[in-house]
Image (cartoon, helix red, strand yellow):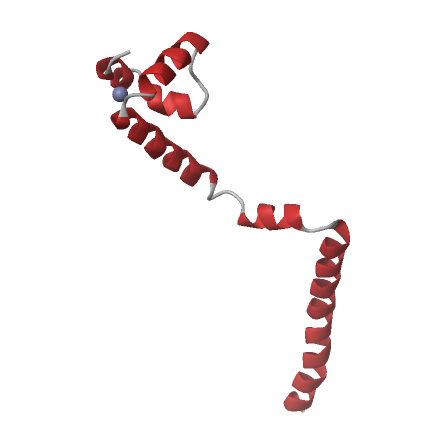
Length: 98
Ligand SMILES: [Zn+2]
């Protein structure tokens, strides 16, 4: 496997993305052992992939870490706040109007 082929077929990117045929993968791994340039390509592709996966879900990651009772607690606290704040504000506003 040479660099012309690796560049033309985006081998490093496909290697990271697990999209290589088994023979292609074996050939690239054999080449990778001795090639700093391709090792760098693979690292770069990995960084690119890692960054692509990130933007999705900070909220989803947090939600996945929460236990169900914690979700219920957060929901209940939100409801209480949404009800309590207007309930406290309305009498104050009514007094201001009069
Ligand atoms: Zn190489």
